[in-house]
Amino acid sequence: MTNPEFQDGIERADRITLGKAITLIESTRVEDQTQAGELLNAITTKTGNSIRVGITGVPGVGKSTFIETFGKLITSKGYKLAVLTIDPTSTRTKGSILGDKTRMEDLAKDPNAFIRPSASGGTLGGVTSRTRESIMLCEAAGFDFIIVETVGVGQSEVAVRNMVDFFLLLMLPGAGDELQGIKKGIMEMADGLVINKADGDNIKKANQAKAEYQQALHLFPPAESGWTTPVLTCSATDGTGIESVLDMILKYVAQTKSSNYFETQRASQAKNWLHEYFDQL
Image: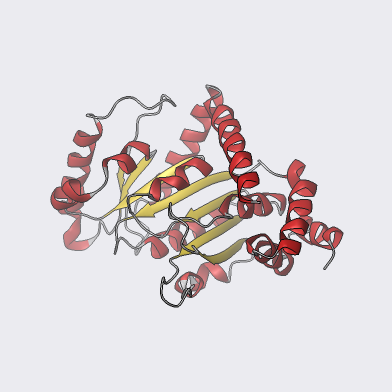
C-alpha cells in the first residue's frame, strides 16, 4: 500500500487501513520506518482534535470491563472512540496475548469504536514505543476520544502521563493496604481517581476508600493545572457512577482549556515526542 492510499484510508476512517497503518509505524524495518515518517508528516494537520485519556490501575481492578462500559457510554453520546490497549511482552518468548479486544466484545462490535491491542515490546512506562504515533493516526481518522489502557501500575507507569490530556487511576475498594503499596508518583500525576467495583457488599468499603484517598491527596502539592483531583466511585458491572467519570473528564478539559493549560501541556508533550521520535530513528 502506498503512502497516499494509507492517508486516504485513514481520512475515510477505514478501520482496516488504520490497523495496517499502526502496524506500519510499529515496525522496526528501516523501509517501513521511512514510509511511516512520510505518513505521519502527511496527516499531522489532521491531528490534535481528540480528548486523550490514559487509564491505569492496580491488578484485578477491572480495567477492560471499565473501559468497555465507559466506552459504550461515550459512543452513546455520539462520540467516536479509539481504544489503544497495551499488553506486556514476554521476556522469554517475546510474544504477547493481546486479549483485550476479546475482553471488550460488545465495544468491539460498536461501529463508533475502534480497539487496537499492541505489545509493549519491553518498553517501560506501560505503553509501546509508538503509542504517541498511534494516537495521531486515530486522531487523523476522526476519533473524538482516545483511550490508552496501560499494562498496569508499576514504577515506570507514569510515562503515559506525558502523552494524554487526562490521566485516570482506577482503584479497588479497601484502600488501607493499597495506600501503602501504590507508588506516590502515580497518585500525584493522576487527574482523577476512580474506585471501581463499588457494588453489593463493596459499597461501604468503596466509600471508606474514597474518604481515605481524598485525605491522602490533600497531602500532595497543588497541581500545575490548577485542577483538584476528584475521587469517584463506580461499578463497571452495573454502570453506576460511569456517567460521573465522563462528566469529570469533560469538566477538566473545559477548565484547562479556559486557563490555557490544555494547549500548553499539549505543546510540551509534542516537543518531548519530537525529541524522542528522532532519537529512536
